[in-house]
Length: 490
Image 1 (spheres, helix red, strand yellow):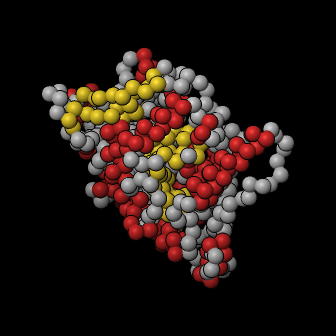
Image 2: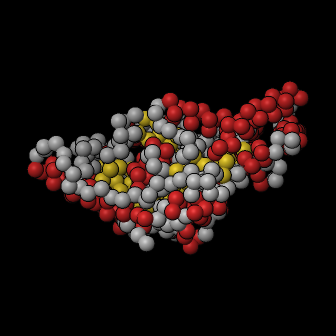
Image 3: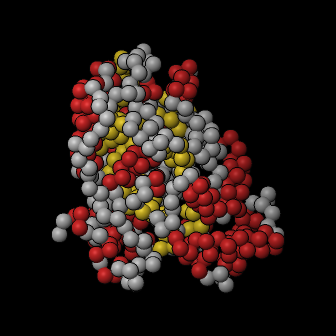
């Protein structure tokens, strides 16, 4: 049977009236790639050839991706993952989030150039044939989710039947956000620098096993007792948290309303994902945050509370490691991070300010100015090693266009000159180590309209190829602007 003929609708279990029809909205056929020979307005021969070449390269790259592929961040987040997911989603049936929460701010643009800032809803939502899954590893703030859905709907993006929320996902309550702020205040000068969206406290509730899951909303008779336990815990821990009977009553009433609205979205997504895999559906996993913020592999404790690296895909969606195929690492052409924590290649001088302004480095979720510096090859190699990336997406290359020279942080060494072989877990060492840089020439020209790799200035090509050489992973996608079309396929 051909791939294009396999649909969930061809399975009797998913037929209209079948046992799964109401729970799982039917998926459209897997994407088939459109011929590039369609009629288009008259353009110059050179532009037409360039456009055809770029289109052919893009279809080849995307068409070769595995049935289950993923897009993950390589650095400290904010790399521009949402844009690539949005582009790739046109060729996938399902886009799934596996971890994190509303701290994952992904900015994407539709075909008309309208900007959308997504936090919980997967970035595939702008592609009308894509089903979006919020997996069991995500912590879900329902008021935020509904606000996002309402915003999408008001801008003409249909969400009905296209968003599935795992019944195993944990709920993030407003009080988790309050606790997040109280926790940060306690830490004073050593604050983590969270988004204060309640992500850490929600995962804490999950790990100490008094969390409340999406599926629990189907049993409203036990919700007051579970909420009382959570709120009492918070009051006992934080003097500034004032818990009253009115708070419990108001929260229960609010969640009764939320439960009714959420019911059509609630799904056994573990079953749905594995059934979709058996039906040969194409699945794209969208990572939130990034590897250097991983709870295990990041700059602990200045990290997030989940696993944004490859391992989080399996635990956050309930799919087997053997089905996960190509993973694409997204990395900026320079480095940024928000909040506290080690940042070996940070540029505290005018160069860092220039990168911040040119790259508009202010958080999607918080609006906070990001710390900026040169691309850290040691951290990038570490990220590639952990995730086993098949390829990389180098983003925001255009931001470097005004620089006379560009530096790459290629090695670490201790104060006595001893080499540091890999990205260390020791924070004191990270704070004290010295970075060795290579200096490459800048290209001093606008590259935002370039669509073929061969048309990039030689210095820009040299920069891209030096990164590939140092890291040992090919760069297949190069971002040269925020729009959907501002992407070079290499």
